[in-house]
Length: 338
Image (cartoon, rainbow, N blue to C red; front, side, top):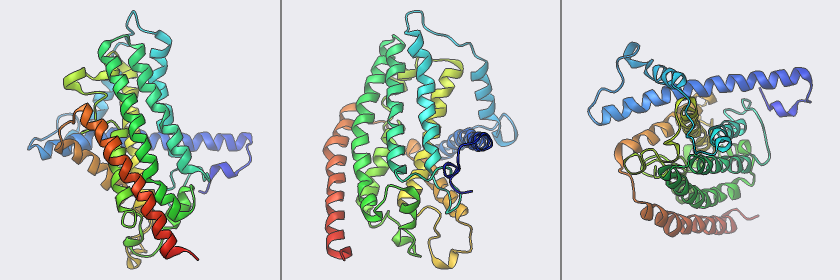
């Protein structure tokens, strides 16, 4: 459909913008609903359990029932909480998570916004969610929520540094911050032209940092149910709690899509003889693999300690990310110059 932002802003175009935004929202909500179901099923199978199997055929309506329960529960606000910030935090967590999806290209012609600084836009907006978690933890006036918020501030700010530096090599190779240009630069016919091989070190750093940015196991320290009884959202109930959960899974969608675009060739086929398969199919297969990988991690690894988490970010990932930039610069100087 091309870039919606290339069109002049008129009343008709504004209606088209709203329509496509609603379509994307429905797709994302559908993804979140069944990603939660799929995650519970995968973890159940890995732990020799059945998983959800009661509500609907094969348990397919279990997440729908859980969400309905949350929406009908009483919305409570602690008496000594900062009411304004307490109400603001869930929306502040979700809005950036949904907004970053505008720059994800699914195929050569299927995207919403073609920004020259699309990658910078993604990173800048996703950082706002850190503020939402800190605000929610502080506004709750609860010591466990405050600890969760402070952990989140330390963790997400620390891991954002290696995350951004890890993609610098990709930017250097493609010569652009535009996500469509980055995918186009990986079009060499075969899968070894995708960035995950020439940028193997950066890819590894990106994956670890992205898992930490998502607050998912083994880096789910801001929640840490066994220590902080759910951390920053311990005082939230009903639909406000649902908003925090929604934001978390929308970011899973966003990070899986971004990983596909930056390192796995986007919509490109792994071999020339497979070009007859539509690009959107390849994109969705790679996207689904990344989502499965994130769920697989949760079933495999225990939660790390906070000191191990911070040490890994500053002492291991940051130097490796800087080394990747240096090696990429050397490679470009020796093999691609002129």
